[in-house]
Length: 255
Image 1 (tube, rainbow, N blue to C red):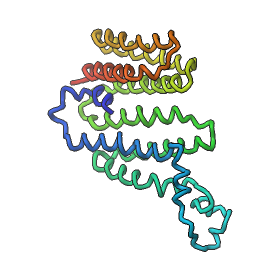
Image 2: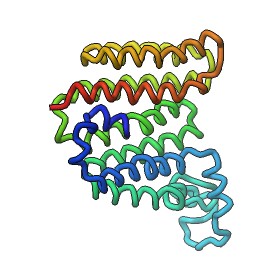
Image 3: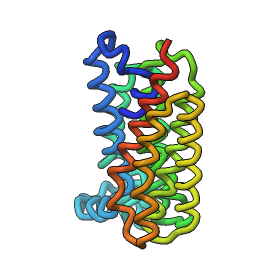
Image 4: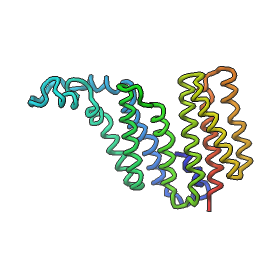
């Protein structure tokens, strides 16, 4: 979210920002969206539901044991509907209320988070569901988009912040793959291409000073790869590089 705000040039317009709405945006993006994703994807979500399931059953013909409705409502075993109702629904409802208070467009982004989170839950049943990509969209792309929407009136050129968001989505997807699967060539390729793309974007933004800083920040990644060390130790360097590149974009697009 902070990267998105920086890429939209919030530094030069901080005095005109409604701080209450900004705090609400942080609450929505970081806490509420994060709780929705966590409720759906944490490994112990379903066991907790099963342990908390009431032992009593309301007798209705369509809720007999092993009936389709019984499976759906979680009487025989945990299902997606009880997961939504008992764990995620309170967070979803609060997130929708906060989103409506900030900007109606954020309602659609919140629904997108819900859909991606449900898809993340399905990863437990269908391994082909790309959980890493879904996590990157929820943690990078949508918060970035929400931040741009928050300051949309001051953005005169959307190309640079959107291109930067896309490149960092690719970077973090590849980085997560490389952290989870050391030596993964596809992940490292994505990281390398994204870093080249971000560097070219900073050049197009005519920000040579920031490019020099980025070049230094890229080095720990490839030193760790060369030494066959875990990339988890350079995650903070990636975060700093994301903020630096966003700051460069923000200086480029301000009126």
